Length: 396
Image (cartoon, rainbow, N blue to C red; front, side, top):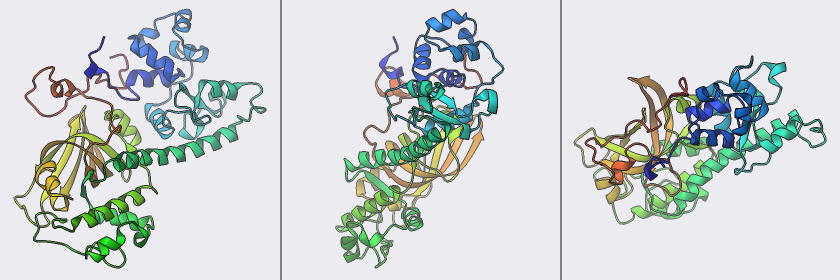
């Protein structure tokens, strides 16, 4: 029995990915992994044994060896994450799924993303049924289901963040106003129609078009003063309405090198919650230019950004939360992706930073026992996850 702190794991760990790429459904793959099976062990079994373990016919052939190569990990990850690992037809999250070829491999020899769709076992059987046309699961219709569902997934991911943030109105510690208002302009957000526009304007914080006006250069932080609350409320409204028209990928539970290499690209918006280190780069403690490097480092992944602490939203954020090591959540735009000294390095431009949000992170990494008193550690950073596997070696 695993201790409670070891139960968190990635959605697409290497063993499960190796099985899904060969046609095993997610429920069967998770159960096999839970029982300690790896691809290498399964390949040493008989077809009868695999069948007794819940592996379906076509997947048995692909595990034991066939002419069809497995779906590449990068493609598999992109397809599954775009569909939230949920069937694009029924959208039922409680059903196990498989990655289905729209045009059968024997005819297309294609593992391209355009030829793949995520289906539950019921709809997968219907797609292969002789009466598939009667049941309206033709290839063109599955493509339409896929396109519609993937668009909805993008909306659901962002709405989950906004819903969690709405539970605590004062959750945000920092806004990058230059980046935020640039995004709002790109998305044609009507700033004058936003809630709190009038109060922020009457307080002299914004101009008639809704863009920031006051600099407050002599203050410790930009919103210092009794009327800073109106500007905070307005900034939060700008963030909420800007994000509604975009997609934000929550990677809090997915800090795995190969997974992030597959799904992230420069320009993507990401949400990441966890333990951050905030390192001051200057001695300034008033006005703009209070440069701080923030980063989250764990499991062979480092996500970092540079911020100006002057743009803190409260005295507590300025004096405490944006210093040292804190549990935080951050929305960033990916600037660059690199591999350096065995780490996957994600460099971002922070849009907003705030308190941890309920339900946005469920996975614990290897410093969890340290946090919960299981043993003492001497360094403050998280190391490789206890399942630190690589896709190239799924039997590890």
